[in-house]
Image 1 (cartoon, helix red, strand yellow):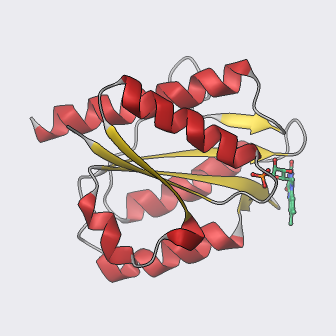
Image 2 (spheres, helix red, strand yellow):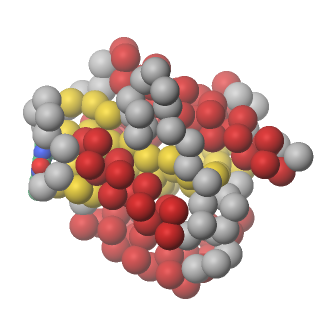
Length: 159
Ligand SMILES: Cc1cc2nc3c(=O)[nH]c(=O)nc-3n(C[C@H](O)[C@H](O)[C@H](O)COP(=O)(O)O)c2cc1C
């Protein structure tokens, strides 16, 4: 069974709602999920325990929030140990065109530097789910789909 971490930062709850939907998707696909705010992740060493790591952030000035960047910077402690794990990103922003896609890309860049495998999406948000403000039904469904895709891919890669 694929074990997936959903690591997120959220100040006013929008990204957290997305994280919960991603977690639901993981469970629907038969995976085991842990949802953690980046501030609650005690040590980067925890990351090696997961097959998939999905990272969510609000958009702050077109990229991930500093709290998420700090979490990713600390992950240097396990550099080379996350190679081949599956990753994904999701983000929230305040206005249409407010930079959620660039936020997802900023997260994905870091995951790729870890050597992780990151799927794109051909018919929904291409770089991972995005939401403007409180996630609507479309965003929730895309979050669930992300969770499912990460489990499916992690299982394929481990087989
Ligand atoms: C410091 C700061 C910078 C922000 N920068 C952007 C931005 O560049 N584009 C945008 O659309 N929204 C921006 N926002 C709005 C948040 O991305 C938005 O409210 C988001 O839904 C908050 O997510 P949360 O509820 O998970 O905290 C910014 C908010 C803050 C506090």
